[in-house]
Amino acid sequence: RNQAVQSREEYLVWITRFYEGWKLYPQGWSDLVPDILAEVEDPDERAELEAELYEAGRFIASEWSKDAETRKVRTRQLSIWGNAMREAVTRGETREMIEQIARDVDRLKAQHLTYSDITPGRYYAEDEDDVFR
Image (cartoon, rainbow, N blue to C red; front, side, top):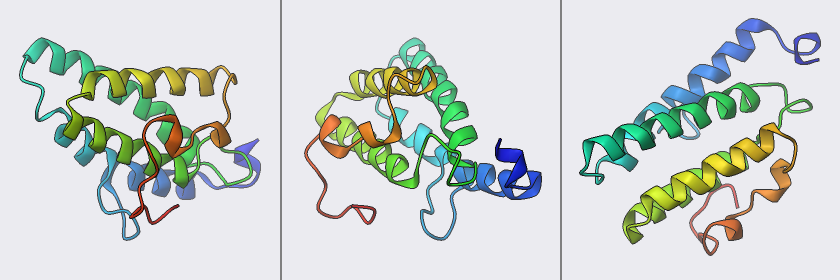
């Protein structure tokens, strides 16, 4: 369905923006994941959480990069997840948050959630500084 309204090249531009960032949101997934995991001292736990984040990221990138009418993930959800992960690090709740986000991504895949279910309050209180609020 997406191929009818979006070129492969445009789709790949958005995939790159997801992983590398862009002017509007300069920190991409490839920057965020190491930052989030920097405080995880146990190498086995870090590897496990990294795998969960990159698995979730594959789905998030593939959906967010689609045309707005066909995607299951919006920019708002990227902001919510990024803010929730950063907050989890400050609270010492990194593992719990990664697991919660991974569950939500699985539920999005299975169509048991929609992007509108992913709100700041699902994770933590709303961030006053969130530009996508």
